[in-house]
Amino acid sequence: MAVGLIEDEVREQLRSRAVDPSTEPEKVRSIIAEIVSATELARARAGLPALPSAKDEAKAVFDAVAGFGPLQPYLDDPSIEEIWLNEPARVFVARSGIPELTNTILTPEQVRTLVERMLRSSGRRLDLSAPFVDAALPDGSRLHVVIPDVTREFWAVNIRKFVATSHSLDDLVRRGSLPSGLAKILSACVRAGLNVLVSGQTQAGKTTMLNCLASAIPPTERVITCEEVFEVQLAARDWVAMQCRQPNLEGNGEVTLRMLVKEALRMRPSRVVVGEVRQAESLDLLLALNSGLPGLATLHANSAREALTKLCTLPLLAGPNISSSFVVPTVASAVDLVVHLGLDRHGRRSTREVLRVTGRVEGDTVETISLYEEGQDTYPRLLAAFDGEPRFARAGIDLAALARELSS
Image (cartoon, rainbow, N blue to C red; front, top):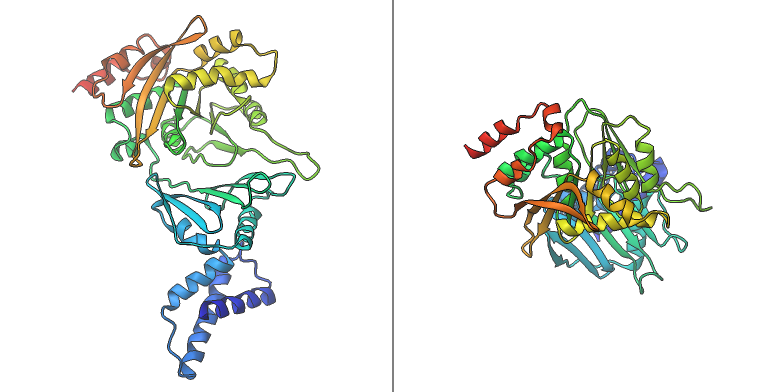
């Protein structure tokens, strides 16, 4: 009861002082501290027991008026990777890839209010004409919402937190997701400008791997990233990040991923990074990679081989004049490596396999060489696959020295 009364008083003070909770959080905290202190003093004078924990009361009120209410503790918990609501009374979270049902129970009105607050900072909208929305929260988490009548009855909400625990390939090695020898080879491949496709299932760690691979890009290079919603986080000093935009109420102003890839080529990039390839933008990415511009991208797939097959199919969505006889050899010449990731039933993420694309096509199939499979601890065939690759020499990378280092 005390929290509810304090919350009402805080909201009244915010209105009277014209304080915006979304842009002035410190003023909100100051007002809450004033009111909690005054409440404690009033209770003491009235002979009432003190509040159980003034700090907890203040945190709960702040979450209610300036945060995301009952969901805020899950957003603050670094062990939680994702939050989703199938209905107001069924709130789930995932820790280390393992889902669990929480005891949080909301009302439909609370869900709508929280989603509207989450969308406020993104400028994106949600209504009957646009029943889906993808948006980024202020902390970088990715929000996805679907509303009825696309869903049966309740709003479906997913919040995928970006828990940036790994920022480099060495971080992945320390977490056990990548062998150290393979990390050194992948770093050399990125520095040499090879084009890498990262594949895997949902939550397998594709974006994290993309970030870690991109950390090996030389600091002198200019990086342009294209995403549906901002997720890629780089330490590059010369970096421009772009995201898609929904159409306005009149149906105008939409910015698609395909448009972003095309625009990126006009921005003097040294590298182009596409957060996730899903549709016709795959054609524009292939054309960019095929013109000598190094790049990185991710793709949903069940295996490295299936990722290549999918990449040979997606460009066909660009129009009837695009044929597989054009796409397949373009994929073969544009992609150099496929790094496939996996997530086991215990929530452990790992690098499952690495394929080297030879550049040759046999019939309608892109020819590949299997360079790495999970559990492998030697890399002679992997390094041999790069013999004669001029990009390593141009980047000043001595493959023979790397081979000696890995064998020592």
